[in-house]
Image 1 (cartoon, rainbow, N blue to C red):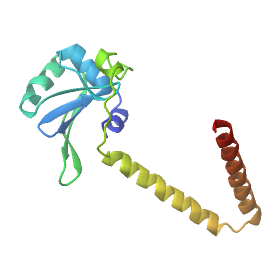
Image 2: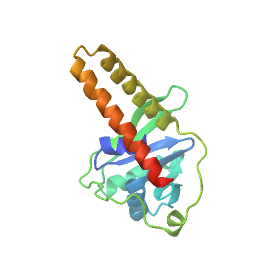
Image 3: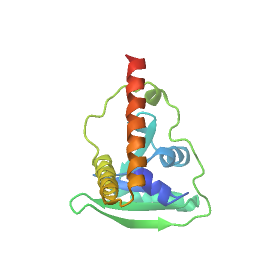
Length: 170
C-alpha cells in the first residue's frame, strides 16, 4: 500500500499510521533518516522503515515544514479498511532520492522470512485471477474461428516451451 501511495504522491514524503506509530518506508524512510535523524529498521530485506509515535506527529511535521519538504500523512482505519488524509503540505523541496535503503549491514545480511500472508498481495492476486477469468470468457465468446486457432496455437507453443525447459533443468 505504501509503495502505491508513494507512486501516487510523487515527490512527497508519505507517512501512514500502523498501530500506535506513523511509518514511512523506502526512499521516504531514507530521507527522514537524513533530515530528522529517525532510526532506520528493516520492514523487509533491503527496504528501510522509520517510525514515530502518534503523539509525535505534530513535532515531526513542523520540522518538515521548517525544512520546506512536501509531505502527506494518511490515517488507515483497520476496522473499516479506509484510508483518509490527515495532513498535507506542499513545500518547495521534493523527495528526489531513488534508493529504497541506506545499504546497511542489517538489510544486506538479512535472512528473516516473513511468514504472515500479505493482505495487499492477496488482493492483487484476486484481481489478476478475475482478469484471467475475463480473458477466458472473451475466448469462449470469440466468434471468429481463426482467433480461437491463434490462441490455441499460442497455448500449444507455450506448453512445448515449458516441456523443453523442464527437460533442460532435469
